[in-house]
Amino acid sequence: MHASRRLAVLLVFVLASSASGQEPRVLNPQVERFVAVNAPVVALTHARVVDGTGAPAREDQTIVIRGETILAVGKTGQVAISQGAQVLDHTGHTVILGIIGLHDHLYWGGTVMMTSYPKLFLAAGVTTIRSTGSLDSYQELNLRRRVSTGEVVGPEVFVTGPYVQGAGQAVGWMHPLNNADEARRLVRYWSEEGVQWFKAYNLVTRDELGAAIDEAHKRGVKVTGHLCSVTFREAVSLGIDNLEHGLTTATEFLPGKQPDVCPPGNADSVYAALDINGAEVQQTIREMVSHRTALTSTLAVGELGSATRVPRDQRVLDALYPGGADQVRKFYDGATPTRADSFHRASLKKAMEFERAFVKAGGLMGAGSDPCCLSQIAGYGDQRNYELLVEAGFTPEQAMQIMTSNGAKILGIAARVGTIAGGQQADLVVLDGNPVASPGDIRKVMLVFRKGLGYDPVKLTDAIKGQVGLR
Ligand SMILES: [Zn+2]
Image (tube, rainbow, N blue to C red; front, top):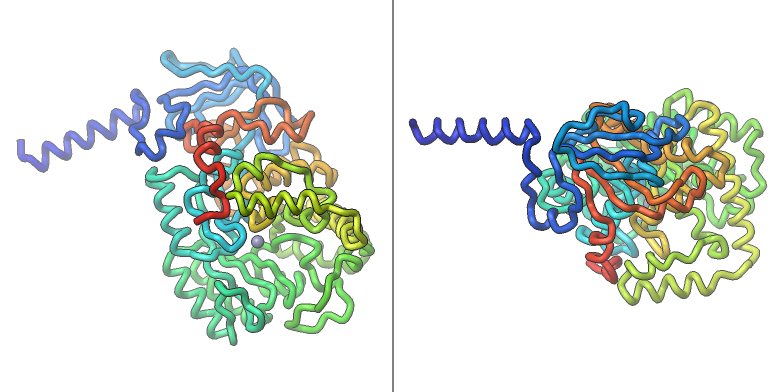
């Protein structure tokens, strides 16, 4: 046989045998060392399942995974498990959809982290992230590729281009735009490089934002924003796809707001006194819903403004490098019930009320952790969001939907990872406990499946101890 033909035959044989799922997957050693389950067919039995659709949790379920995909889900005993399947008894445990973190930066304290953060996200049950504000889009594009080819472990990464920021006090890594043409140039270049989203920032003008959205949409790329100079309503009418952070970045409610300018000063006391059922707020909600503008809830980072509320989390101190851990220890220890702290508590409550009103009005809301600073780090911040969404008044199943299925809808991947059902990609998190009855159980991650491979959260977190905050 001709050598190249022989190679082709061999390749067909290899592909056919892996597709038939007879062998465990051959993994890169950098990935394999974190994998606890790698079998052609896996059955998770006797588990409670929260499927991400908002439907009530179902008891005593079996999920069969074949390769990268969920084959079947149903009552234990009524779902066929093929011979040779690896069967895991999950009595007393809960399986949720992999968390989709929509505001999940790959940096903390200004330091970009391409080794510790991807592992920490995965360890905490976050199987997909959108970086939503990037300090180094090329590193993110490289990470996205390396995760997808199986060279490194991590969540699937939706890469955001450099911040779309207006002129003025730009942070070091942001290019301050001077006009709409410059906005178009930035969006054109980075769209061609492969970013999937842009994030407009607090000093952008209406002109620049409108140009950026127009240029992005021509290329099938989407735009979100952490806004201030442009109001929510203005951004909605310009066609923005998503708004970050919610109520406390909606500046149409601030007295004396001038066009294209971010109002000065701390507005917590204004938000704290706002009537969510009043005409002003309801108009913004209505316009967002009618234009299908999604909202990203980031309650956990919002909570940092009231240090007295933030629960002390030893896992955060363990993950951070010593200098960072000192900084966070001081933050925890320094929590005092000041006037500013209490205004912020009240504005956080209003932000929660706003999010409930938005969802009730038919708005599409996802969630993200914004693991940028202080105690807010990858993955653990997403878990805190769940507790805060439940505190906000969502049912546990709704909170789960916000953190999983809704994120998939916003990213346009709901047909692939939008629920726990046959045919969906096997991105699943096994929790030791019942997060419906005890929201804190979302922290008890036992096993994280991404594309059908089961990762060990202990191995992942052990590998990054003391490293968060270092390059
Ligand atoms: Zn952010």
